[in-house]
Length: 258
Image (cartoon, rainbow, N blue to C red; front, side):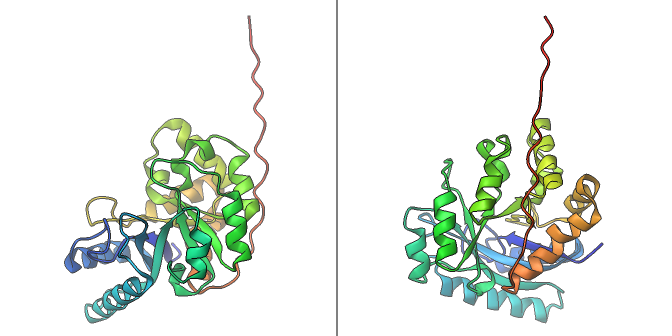
């Protein structure tokens, strides 16, 4: 299996709802490494609930974690990252350097919907692109408005978004219809990156290998390699990512018998 890249994993102790202690963070890193993950975006929430989490705080915490990994010879490379909750002034926050880009490269921003809300992100995505940063939408499969509306995710991608799906959504879908819809996303080319969204060694552990295998079954090994590894490497190094527009959703025709 190709070395995996976790583009979304809460690894920074005490910063948000991820690991509470350094020991928990190291345990997560061991789990990730043993599961085949070689690189991970050490992610922390940036939103109103975690208002004290600044870019500098994330940078320092990631540097400390990286040093601990070296001392303990855990073969995992970590990169600073924020999961930025979308709000009306998010573009201004970016211009004021109040939010952190993926790996601190200034090229990509991991964003999420507001808590318990679905908002139309197309204009915000376009504004972020004009401001020089490309949004990566975290776990959009959680929103039925996107997952079960075939054209909606394509419009967001057209507006400039990349799509990051969580590994647990692949291996433990909420329902059979969700699994079928997500499978269609992968087969259409509507998913670009995978993240574990790990939060602790026990709850949402940072694992991706089983999801990789399922994606390979659904859409082929080359697609799984791209989503679970090579695209993530490009993002973590701030390299341009050229994607093919997703295939149109197939129309479903139903015949009614009386």
